[in-house]
Image (cartoon, rainbow, N blue to C red; front, side, top):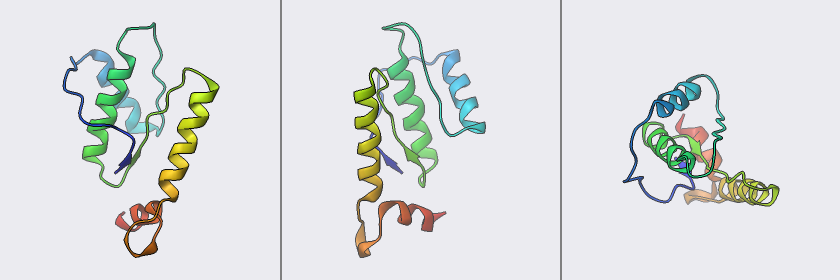
Length: 101
C-alpha cells in the first residue's frame, strides 16, 4: 500500500466508532471523522487506516489533517508527490499499484 502512516498504533482501545468507520469503508472510499478535541479521532483514524492498509496491499491510504485549509493543501500535495514517485523500471508508483490489481 502507499500510505503516510508512520508505524503501528500500539496504544488504541477499540470502540463502537471503529466498527462504524470500518463499515463506512465498505461502501465509500473516504471517511471524515469529527468530534471534540481530545476524543480520540486521530488514533481512531490511524488505527482503522493502518488495519485497512495491511489487508489491502494495493490500496492508497492517506491521512490528511483537516484542521486548516493549509494542512489540507499540504496533505493533498504530499499525496500527489507520493503517487507521482517512480519505482523500479521507471514506472510511476500509482501505475505499479494498478498493475497489481
